Amino acid sequence: MVANDSFNQYLDRAVRHYASLFTLPSYKKSLMLSALVCLTVGLLYVLVLHRSLLGLTRGLLLGVMLVASTVLSNYFLGFYVFKKDPVYDLRRVAAFSLFCWVLWLFFILMGCAVSFFSDSTWAIRLCLLGFSAVLILRFIVLYVTSSSGVGCFLVASIVPPLFCLMPFMVFWINLANFLRISIFLLYAIGIALLSSFLFIALLNNVGKQAVGFPPLSIFKAFLLNWIADLNKPFEIYLESLSNESDVRVSIIRFEGETNNVFMIVPSVHPGPFKNIGSSFLPSMLKTGVERKFGGVACVLLGLLGHEFDLASQNESQKIIDYVVESAVFKAEEHNATHFVKVRNELATTCCQIFGKTALITFSLAPNTTEDLPQELGSAIQRKAEKFRLEECVFVNAHNSINGTLDSKQALEALESTAMACLEKAVSMEKLPFKIGAATVMPKEFKLSDGMGPGGITVVVVEVAGRKTAYVVFDGNNMVSGLREKILLALQSIGIDDGEVFTTDTHSVNAVTLSARGYHPIGEVMNHERLIEYVTEAARNALANLSQAKVKFSYVQIPRVKVIGRESLEKLCMLPDMVVRRAKRIVAPLFIATSLLLMLFLLLV
Image (cartoon, rainbow, N blue to C red; front, side, top):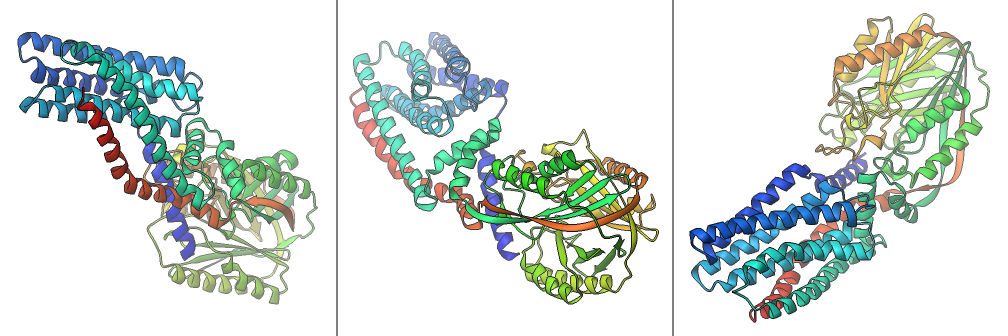
């Protein structure tokens, strides 16, 4: 669990690195700020080159010309050059243009300051140096982010700065040697290309050493996923880094008089994020089983972490196909024990035995319940075998997020309650039972709110008149305290006890710019409305309660591509490594570039 906590920190930090790149202003705001910068530049030139009333008019005219050049170049890129580019719409083009103007303004301010006390040609020289800096920025950013061809890349990098330079050149008509400026522009484009690609090559070398791939290409694949929902470009890298492993899926099948109910626990983690890998596996598997067999299915989280993320959606579909083909077995056992819950100061473990299979669930609520290691189940499985139970199905409730907890202490508390809970359950008489289940799909809650497409499923089990509810949210964890509210609300409709679960779907991760990168269930959702949905599903489940039989089985899927902890950890650490390398090389590289450009500019 300590290792899992450390790994989750790497993953969260990587998502925050990427997410920070998408906080862009609106198109209207970008345009207004760009206009403000352009008009500021025009007025600065008045103060330096034409200190008169006529100069004020010329300065405003320069500012208006720069605004017009910016707007026209934005439309040219947005509607023609990047017409088919999935990343660059007009809003992003305008935001990028604004960032370029902010960089250029820095050099213009320096030039005006020097020219105010010295020769006015410094305003020209430093404006041209700023032009070169903008070229370098555009070469780097567009190479990394644009999916258009080489021609579009060169046009988008070079043409807008040249177009915005033209009003300056009109203003310099009596102040500069245009032949020398023209030669400098060719020189600047060559130097900018050289320094940009040297910078990119040095950064890519970090990734090649760490994972065998250039990190900026991986970033572009991530960008295509974030903006255009294209999963395959990023999954190509994941599949190349993956290991083949046999995957086990535990299935508890209930056959009632009126419906089938499935509880499914794959030995796969539903990650790493968005629609990549196995992030959608819980809802996809639920849908696949229900479509094949009818009834209601719920997919629960086992004892595992991100080291068991699948490399692609294709691998998820392979698991679904195997499960659907193999879940045709018939239920045979008629008996179950009562639902048992054991608590101590940290942990809560629940156990219910169906036939010869124990369903054991773990929670640390109201403290944080995150990924739990497989080792937690080993000692409990051995004890279960002594009680002549054929199988234990272990489930991580993953139902509370609230700060941090000492991992070793938490695991000891979970194991202690599990042993006591199992002993209590096996001592109980097995009796005939009823089962009912229902799913509701909250229309107002979306992925960005933390609700996956699997919605809310409630399975109700009745043994000798005592009713238990298993409430499953298709989400990634839950705010602390909501679980207790739900269980209390269920008591008011005749349900004696139960537990609340989330699937830990990572389909809700990296779809919002929140600090965590996702919203757990209940963070931005109305709690009263959520509880209404849960009680609606519970009432529907109670309405279709019927005598049932049960059987446990499992599916072993061979040679599934799993990312593996080591590979995924390297990918998550890669942004930090690239940022550290960039900080080391950016100053010496671009100081050297600036010196090369300034040596030429002294002749202008």
